[in-house]
Image 1: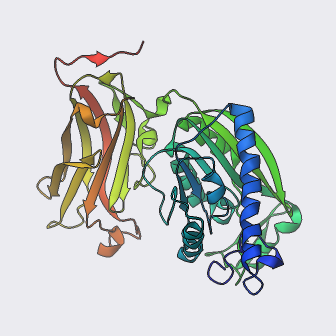
Image 2: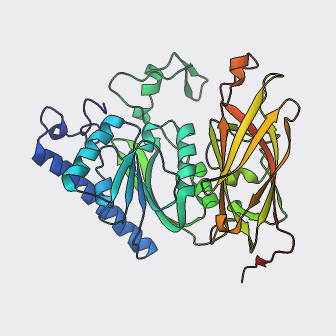
Image 3: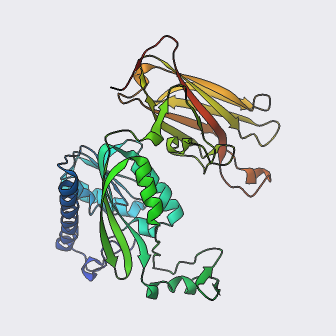
Length: 395
């Protein structure tokens, strides 16, 4: 759909079919984005006060229908979409408009922003993956920033049957019908709509520091959803704070999950594995130290064979500070990092990047059916001020 009908796949009106599309129709298409964002921005300012964002992110931007409208209200906007064909049209429009404060890319950027928007996007992403995306988006919003995110949460009964017809077999236990399938079969030319559990979404919002929310219900032909309009507190949530001398555990019942940004698996009873070539931690030191900080990390390396080696490059504030090597003689234990004062944000914020060279999967070695690309396992973290250094205690 993205390649054949990039505009119609966003707004299903016949005037936006490729065969009928002309410049006036394209202009009308983008004008609908102005209308939608005007409504969103009015809601944000009405419920949470005046807002002049310097940075914004439009997740699932498509051809930029909402992105360009956001650019009239934010100093800079990044549009993110996984479909290069969509972004080609978005970039053509940017050139046509001479819009210098807009950029488009396929990956969510690392930098934090003041406003994140997403509309009729997450409903097309399976909820397990979508919840991980939401968590990352929520965490990218700076203290005091805003969100305007729409997702689907339920559907009318008449729409539930589509899964029965696209599954291998259905199961009825006397009370409910379940679709049983190894892999959901999506019909050609159709997109599934997935429903999100608002209990989980609200829990993630609370954890990320959103103190105020305004919800507006939506109904797209029987698919019921909600606009989540919110403002993040200016205070750093406790889930992101690391007190000096405090040991944070990254196991499933530990308190470290709030520090895990990108490139980590789900925590396990012992700790958490990195998954992929880059993994990141982000937290706020409390109180902010006046001098250098010593970080002590307990780690395990994934070494599938006796001769295996693992190399990890560690960076802070995009500056390489350590090269760690693990082998069968040194597979685990404590690794230390010295953090200079200038690497720590004014609010005590710190981001650590672990760049794993050649991560490997257990399935490659016949050890298990686990296809994750493992590198290091993180067990715990302790931060200590340099001996003799003072800290900025909170007022």
